[in-house]
Length: 495
Image (cartoon, rainbow, N blue to C red; front, side):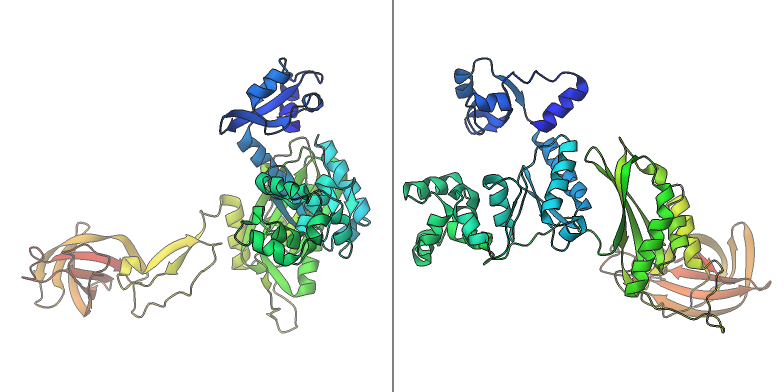
């Protein structure tokens, strides 16, 4: 509802606060209430009720349809935005976030100060929040929705702090909650007092959202429920917190690169990717990524890769937090490349590749890669210079020409030597007379890949009277039953 109101305010069409308003979504028996404003809640309109029934209660009720997909995208963006406080965040249902703040709270002055900071930042986005800290996912979920304001629960306090909460705090479905109330189990403490064997017998085949014993064990930490964060943040990163929103992070990049490389050097590692992330004041997150062809931790080189790329960041209304994170972290060994123990400061090939790729794009700079194939044109391919290898390359066992044509060029044979190369042939409107040759090297088709009827090849290395060396082949044999006379093609040239 707050997101819908914010969008309407930007368009100047938001209704007054005293108008009862609900957002509807499709249900099993017609539209149902998805969200309500404060005026509608005060008139007894609840989430999940049918729209036709609520119109009978409140004839002046205004109904708008909810943007479910847009709400989900906004919450996913909020998951990334919340990583300003901790590296592990995940979406919890349709209206919640779970943050694993282990080891992060002391950076903000403790858990109480952290909750105040979170509530303040979320309120600046126009979002109302209920926050709590608990030892488990289930405990934090229950205390945030049914506990006191900004509740903090230690690991040894979960039993008695959760015991006073209603059974609705166990994340159970409606049918199970109705059954527990009929049995007189209205609080979590009452469920705790029931013998485990009785609960096990009653709910042994129930699903997770219908099993109060499993939900209780999750809330008390007896059953693990880890935070499986999406796009988990890299382990090594540095941040710059700004007093006021800005629109250009360029001036902060040198110091961030320096601090990040110091962290990498302290751990004896380098990186192959850098992620620059800015957290906007409107709750959005924008980022750019640069990559390197070799593991490095040179701050000047890494800073240079962001040249002409920072302008791609959409600052929106400004951002107040900048994060520089290392990706593709690998061990980096120090190599002495001079006799005096220093290093060669000249431009290395890997740095040249990085700069060209950053300047013209990763697809503009390529490198060759070998494939497992004995067909010459299939034995080598091209990949981006910054790409990593998933498997080791297979060395080519035979000598191949330096220049291999993408498509073999057919030649016209004037006179052929039996079982040998042509003694004279015409290629590119020039006549070549063979002075010497070597071969043949017979290459059979790949029957599991080639079409039926593909003919084998006999490759020859020939040299003409001027010393030019050519690699050509004869496609097919006489009377092999796979076509007419053999054809000749030039496939490459030697140095």
